[in-house]
Length: 233
Image (cartoon, rainbow, N blue to C red; front, side):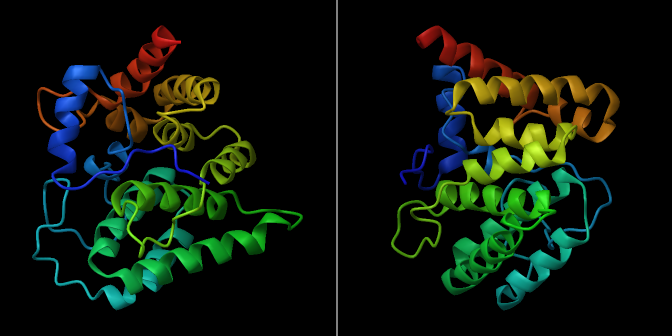
């Protein structure tokens, strides 16, 4: 199934800022990668840089990527921790195609095992959805992208449904539906914004700017995306 995201090559994030200025968030997916999420003091994969990308000083052995990532994901029930961990994992995955493939296979296998159970794991579905979308955006259409042909949206929709009132997961869903489906995106964005009133961590993330002082906030991004697309219909 063809991805909803456009494909990007470096310099992805700087190019996307220009698109934001010109098109007022005619968004193709870079927020999943180009914007680091605030997770407070929670554990995630090693990350030295204060910017969105790896610094080159991490000295991380990507042969451990799948096991380390899954250990962090299984130890947290905080959606933003999952989002930032999978963002970092995807940055590492681009450097190591075998590690990228192993991680996705394990995450998807974990999802497959829970889909038909009597008590499916919302976060297992969420992780497969989010990792699929970050891979499709960051690894592109290269033949070694293991996410080619996958669509994360059905897993995301099911995860949100199972999780119930989780505004952080609604935020993630809003980011992954910036290019549609439109009705679902609007609902996710509205619930994320409403939930931030009682979720300090989410509120901090929504208030941060996408990339640089001149760019819009994450809150503006998920709201303006809807307004822009509605106006074009």
